[in-house]
Length: 180
Image 1 (tube, rainbow, N blue to C red):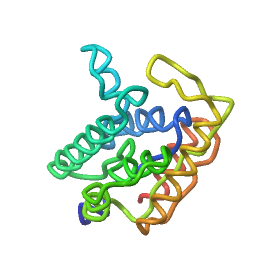
Image 2: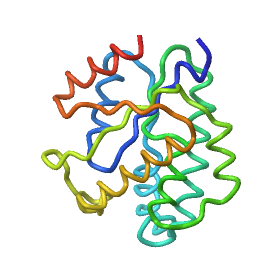
Image 3: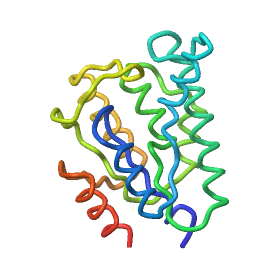
Image 4: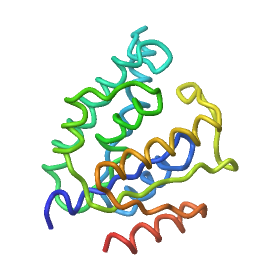
């Protein structure tokens, strides 16, 4: 199986259960990555940095791109299926959401750094959505984020597979059945 073939992105708006699903997939023995945006926010807040979505959005996007590309390179050293908690194209989707132009180098990165053709999308799910210290978006913004990401991944030629709004165990089963 090619690198692209064994790398699966799980994307969607904030608070839709992506990270919980990926945590469960990891417990089931699959490789995984850590969501770049949340990690950057945690690190920047701990040092008083400005690469935050509510401070310097452009710097935040550049740091996400760097982190996503690094995660991809690190995953290439692993064997087996790896689930990505967002991918390089999410950076383009983020800028699209903001109504900002996507710089050529970010477009090029999304064209060059490829994942499995099938991208899993966690749809907005009001019943599980929660704001927290790093997730300041409201539910309406979560919907807009998901819409921007869906449009972005489609524009890069990916086929989207919507995750059902079911328990984590049922989501794991749904995903595993589709990657085997």
